[in-house]
Length: 71
Image (cartoon, rainbow, N blue to C red):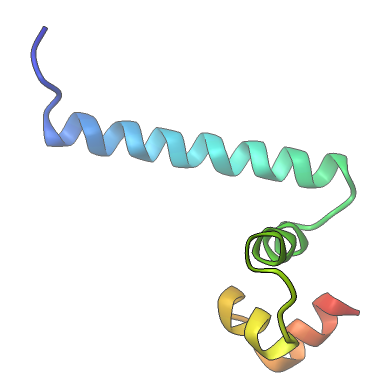
């Protein structure tokens, strides 16, 4: 069996990323969350308590957007 080429690996990673995005969107919708809310929960689970400012930095959201998300 031949070793995969860089193009093969790039294609496999692209496919994996798209499938992961679909799975996350499906899961978020099933539990009534937006993708941003799910992202926030994942960061909080991994890091523990965060300030709104730190969570906003991690999610690359403005202060207004993070306030709306937290509300």
